[in-house]
Image (cartoon, rainbow over all chains, first blue to last red; front, side, top):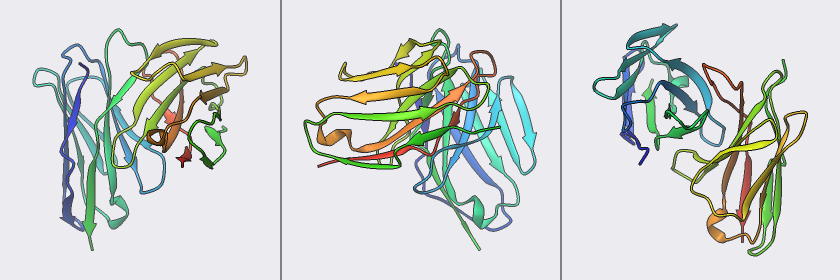
Length: 112
Length: 113
Protein backbone atom coordinates (compact mmCIF):
# COMPACT_ATOMS: atom_id res chain seq x y z
CA UNK A 1 0.00 0.00 0.00
CA UNK A 2 1.49 3.28 -1.08
CA UNK A 3 0.57 5.78 1.62
CA UNK A 4 1.41 9.41 2.15
CA UNK A 5 0.29 10.89 5.45
CA UNK A 6 -0.12 14.53 6.36
CA UNK A 7 -1.78 16.28 9.27
CA UNK A 8 -4.90 17.83 7.78
CA UNK A 9 -4.71 20.82 10.11
CA UNK A 10 -5.83 23.47 10.06
CA UNK A 11 -2.50 24.99 11.01
CA UNK A 12 -2.57 28.64 12.00
CA UNK A 13 0.52 30.81 12.41
CA UNK A 14 0.93 34.57 12.87
CA UNK A 15 2.39 36.64 10.09
CA UNK A 16 6.18 36.56 10.17
CA UNK A 17 6.38 33.22 11.98
CA UNK A 18 7.75 29.91 10.70
CA UNK A 19 5.19 27.40 9.46
CA UNK A 20 6.21 23.75 9.65
CA UNK A 21 4.42 21.16 7.53
CA UNK A 22 5.11 17.45 7.84
CA UNK A 23 4.67 14.37 5.70
CA UNK A 24 5.44 10.67 6.16
CA UNK A 25 5.45 7.96 3.52
CA UNK A 26 5.24 4.20 3.60
CA UNK A 27 7.80 2.94 1.06
CA UNK A 28 11.42 3.20 2.14
CA UNK A 29 12.52 2.87 -1.47
CA UNK A 30 10.93 6.17 -2.53
CA UNK A 31 13.33 8.48 -4.30
CA UNK A 32 11.58 11.74 -5.11
CA UNK A 33 9.47 14.04 -2.99
CA UNK A 34 7.50 17.12 -3.89
CA UNK A 35 5.60 19.92 -2.18
CA UNK A 36 2.69 21.60 -3.88
CA UNK A 37 0.63 24.61 -2.84
CA UNK A 38 -3.06 24.68 -3.69
CA UNK A 39 -5.21 27.75 -3.23
CA UNK A 40 -8.93 27.18 -2.78
CA UNK A 41 -10.58 26.42 -6.12
CA UNK A 42 -7.26 26.30 -7.97
CA UNK A 43 -4.92 23.53 -9.13
CA UNK A 44 -1.74 22.48 -7.30
CA UNK A 45 1.38 24.54 -7.94
CA UNK A 46 4.83 22.98 -7.52
CA UNK A 47 6.86 24.68 -4.78
CA UNK A 48 9.84 22.39 -4.32
CA UNK A 49 11.24 18.98 -5.07
CA UNK A 50 13.83 17.12 -3.00
CA UNK A 51 15.72 13.88 -3.64
CA UNK A 52 18.62 13.72 -1.20
CA UNK A 53 18.70 13.57 2.58
CA UNK A 54 19.11 16.94 4.21
CA UNK A 55 17.81 20.41 3.54
CA UNK A 56 17.04 22.24 0.32
CA UNK A 57 16.33 25.95 0.44
CA UNK A 58 14.52 28.14 -2.08
CA UNK A 59 13.78 31.64 -0.90
CA UNK A 60 11.53 31.48 2.16
CA UNK A 61 10.93 27.75 1.67
CA UNK A 62 13.08 24.91 3.02
CA UNK A 63 12.36 21.25 2.33
CA UNK A 64 13.86 18.67 4.67
CA UNK A 65 14.20 14.97 3.86
CA UNK A 66 15.05 12.10 6.18
CA UNK A 67 14.81 8.82 4.29
CA UNK A 68 15.71 6.71 7.30
CA UNK A 69 12.68 8.05 9.15
CA UNK A 70 10.58 8.21 5.95
CA UNK A 71 9.81 11.82 6.69
CA UNK A 72 9.76 14.98 4.59
CA UNK A 73 8.89 18.46 5.80
CA UNK A 74 8.42 21.96 4.48
CA UNK A 75 9.33 25.06 6.44
CA UNK A 76 8.00 28.45 5.43
CA UNK A 77 9.93 31.34 6.98
CA UNK A 78 8.50 34.82 7.45
CA UNK A 79 5.00 33.51 6.69
CA UNK A 80 2.74 35.88 4.80
CA UNK A 81 -1.07 35.94 4.52
CA UNK A 82 -0.61 35.03 0.84
CA UNK A 83 0.88 31.71 2.01
CA UNK A 84 -2.56 30.70 3.31
CA UNK A 85 -3.39 27.62 1.25
CA UNK A 86 -3.43 23.83 1.37
CA UNK A 87 0.00 22.23 1.08
CA UNK A 88 0.20 18.83 -0.59
CA UNK A 89 3.03 16.35 -0.20
CA UNK A 90 3.65 14.02 -3.16
CA UNK A 91 5.88 10.96 -3.37
CA UNK A 92 7.19 9.20 -6.43
CA UNK A 93 7.27 5.53 -5.50
CA UNK A 94 9.91 3.23 -7.01
CA UNK A 95 8.96 0.93 -9.86
CA UNK A 96 5.92 3.05 -10.66
CA UNK A 97 7.61 5.20 -13.25
CA UNK A 98 6.59 8.78 -12.94
CA UNK A 99 3.47 8.21 -10.82
CA UNK A 100 2.84 10.49 -7.88
CA UNK A 101 0.97 9.62 -4.70
CA UNK A 102 -0.41 12.56 -2.73
CA UNK A 103 -1.31 13.13 0.88
CA UNK A 104 -4.61 14.75 1.77
CA UNK A 105 -2.92 18.09 2.36
CA UNK A 106 -2.42 20.43 5.30
CA UNK A 107 -4.46 23.61 5.44
CA UNK A 108 -2.36 26.62 6.50
CA UNK A 109 -3.75 29.96 7.61
CA UNK A 110 -1.39 32.87 8.21
CA UNK A 111 -2.99 35.40 10.51
CA UNK A 112 -2.12 39.08 9.84
CA UNK B 1 6.91 28.45 -22.79
CA UNK B 2 3.27 27.35 -22.86
CA UNK B 3 1.87 25.84 -19.68
CA UNK B 4 -0.59 22.97 -19.28
CA UNK B 5 -4.08 23.77 -20.49
CA UNK B 6 -7.33 21.90 -19.91
CA UNK B 7 -10.82 22.12 -21.33
CA UNK B 8 -13.55 22.61 -20.50
CA UNK B 9 -13.26 24.52 -17.22
CA UNK B 10 -16.58 23.35 -15.86
CA UNK B 11 -18.97 20.64 -16.93
CA UNK B 12 -22.34 19.41 -15.69
CA UNK B 13 -23.48 15.94 -16.71
CA UNK B 14 -26.25 13.56 -15.78
CA UNK B 15 -25.68 10.16 -14.23
CA UNK B 16 -25.14 7.52 -16.91
CA UNK B 17 -23.77 9.95 -19.50
CA UNK B 18 -20.26 9.96 -20.93
CA UNK B 19 -17.72 12.78 -20.76
CA UNK B 20 -14.44 13.65 -22.48
CA UNK B 21 -11.91 15.98 -20.88
CA UNK B 22 -8.93 17.40 -22.75
CA UNK B 23 -5.40 18.39 -21.83
CA UNK B 24 -2.51 19.97 -23.69
CA UNK B 25 0.87 19.33 -22.14
CA UNK B 26 3.53 21.92 -21.40
CA UNK B 27 5.98 22.57 -24.19
CA UNK B 28 8.78 19.98 -24.12
CA UNK B 29 6.88 17.49 -21.95
CA UNK B 30 6.00 14.05 -23.31
CA UNK B 31 4.25 12.47 -20.32
CA UNK B 32 0.72 13.24 -19.16
CA UNK B 33 -0.85 12.08 -15.90
CA UNK B 34 -4.50 12.40 -14.90
CA UNK B 35 -5.75 12.82 -11.35
CA UNK B 36 -9.14 13.02 -9.66
CA UNK B 37 -9.43 15.32 -6.68
CA UNK B 38 -12.54 15.11 -4.52
CA UNK B 39 -13.34 17.97 -2.18
CA UNK B 40 -11.01 18.00 0.81
CA UNK B 41 -8.82 15.21 -0.55
CA UNK B 42 -5.48 15.01 -2.27
CA UNK B 43 -5.30 14.20 -5.96
CA UNK B 44 -5.78 10.49 -6.74
CA UNK B 45 -3.77 9.05 -9.60
CA UNK B 46 -5.96 7.76 -12.45
CA UNK B 47 -3.41 6.88 -15.14
CA UNK B 48 -0.41 8.14 -17.03
CA UNK B 49 0.44 8.24 -20.73
CA UNK B 50 3.87 8.22 -22.30
CA UNK B 51 4.45 8.03 -26.06
CA UNK B 52 0.77 7.35 -26.63
CA UNK B 53 0.77 4.27 -24.37
CA UNK B 54 -0.73 3.87 -20.91
CA UNK B 55 2.19 3.83 -18.49
CA UNK B 56 0.53 2.92 -15.21
CA UNK B 57 -2.94 3.04 -13.75
CA UNK B 58 -4.35 3.76 -10.33
CA UNK B 59 -7.32 2.11 -8.65
CA UNK B 60 -9.99 3.30 -11.08
CA UNK B 61 -12.49 1.12 -12.99
CA UNK B 62 -12.23 0.49 -16.74
CA UNK B 63 -14.93 3.06 -17.48
CA UNK B 64 -12.13 5.59 -16.99
CA UNK B 65 -10.06 5.49 -20.16
CA UNK B 66 -7.65 7.76 -21.94
CA UNK B 67 -5.67 8.59 -25.02
CA UNK B 68 -2.49 10.43 -25.82
CA UNK B 69 -1.89 11.93 -29.23
CA UNK B 70 1.36 12.37 -31.20
CA UNK B 71 1.57 16.00 -30.06
CA UNK B 72 1.44 14.69 -26.44
CA UNK B 73 -1.99 16.15 -25.75
CA UNK B 74 -4.37 13.79 -23.99
CA UNK B 75 -7.99 12.95 -23.33
CA UNK B 76 -9.72 11.42 -20.33
CA UNK B 77 -12.98 9.64 -21.04
CA UNK B 78 -15.42 8.55 -18.39
CA UNK B 79 -18.37 6.35 -19.31
CA UNK B 80 -21.53 5.62 -17.33
CA UNK B 81 -21.04 8.59 -15.03
CA UNK B 82 -21.86 8.13 -11.36
CA UNK B 83 -22.60 10.77 -8.76
CA UNK B 84 -19.26 9.99 -7.04
CA UNK B 85 -17.42 11.01 -10.21
CA UNK B 86 -18.13 14.63 -9.31
CA UNK B 87 -14.67 16.07 -8.68
CA UNK B 88 -11.88 18.27 -9.99
CA UNK B 89 -10.02 16.44 -12.75
CA UNK B 90 -6.40 17.46 -13.07
CA UNK B 91 -3.95 16.87 -15.83
CA UNK B 92 -0.22 17.14 -15.19
CA UNK B 93 2.62 17.02 -17.68
CA UNK B 94 6.25 16.12 -17.15
CA UNK B 95 9.37 14.90 -18.83
CA UNK B 96 9.97 11.14 -18.86
CA UNK B 97 13.21 11.53 -16.95
CA UNK B 98 14.33 12.67 -13.51
CA UNK B 99 13.48 14.87 -11.71
CA UNK B 100 9.95 13.87 -12.88
CA UNK B 101 8.49 17.19 -11.77
CA UNK B 102 4.83 17.37 -12.71
CA UNK B 103 3.10 20.61 -13.60
CA UNK B 104 -0.65 20.83 -13.35
CA UNK B 105 -3.21 22.43 -15.57
CA UNK B 106 -6.07 24.49 -14.14
CA UNK B 107 -8.38 21.48 -13.94
CA UNK B 108 -11.89 20.63 -15.07
CA UNK B 109 -14.65 20.75 -12.47
CA UNK B 110 -17.11 17.96 -13.25
CA UNK B 111 -20.50 17.85 -11.58
CA UNK B 112 -22.69 14.77 -12.05
CA UNK B 113 -26.36 15.18 -11.16
